Length: 325
Image (tube, helix red, strand yellow):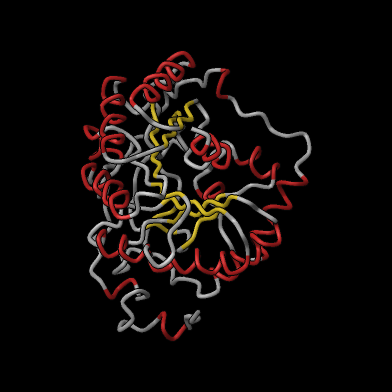
């Protein structure tokens, strides 16, 4: 495998690794979100319990810092961080920590992204091997500044990890806007074990919550991947509480299933800060239960549905359920 040098990273003739300014990228702007002084009180069923002992959590953070790696758990302020880090599980975030889009629900930084770390793939592989992880999830920030959307780096990471460990690899990818066909073709070089792309919410709210994204193109990404690689399980995720209706959510479920999605995750949106979109409502446990029943009746092989469910939450357990169907 050819190692990519810093010189190559700075060379605009390399179509996979280019400087941000090499391509005209419009930073997606969003309306200023007013500070919400009437924040809804969290119901007791979604309050996160802090662990009595934080030694394992600090150890996980130390592993990430030592190996110059990042986790979406930290960058997106995931409510399950304490539980997952305590169990020795983590969702790695590649391609830097700065996103080229500014979705107002997301806590990840946005702006001009960093150059890709040429050592990230090998650092990932060595860390995963040392931690003896049997199922790893890789995700990334959106990289509209790269001609391939970062797909080559995903493939490089998969190949490098597999050269070191016999591990199942799940990838949670962005929409690869303007380079979908190229990105999907690139995946053929080293397919993941699970392909995940989140549609997040209902199409009616896309202009508000996912500026720069397109619902139909997200569905197309999922369906085209399934058509190209039918043996690889596909997955998508939704977050509730942003103003959608259950009727709209059920329609999205049907859209996902008809576009080849096998597994589904549904969770509650939680406002990262007062500068982000406010929670419109908290979905009850009964509603989550009913939505799970509906999703299974539509035909999904595995559905994780609950207030604190996130895309990679208990990912290993979910794929085991899928395999046992």
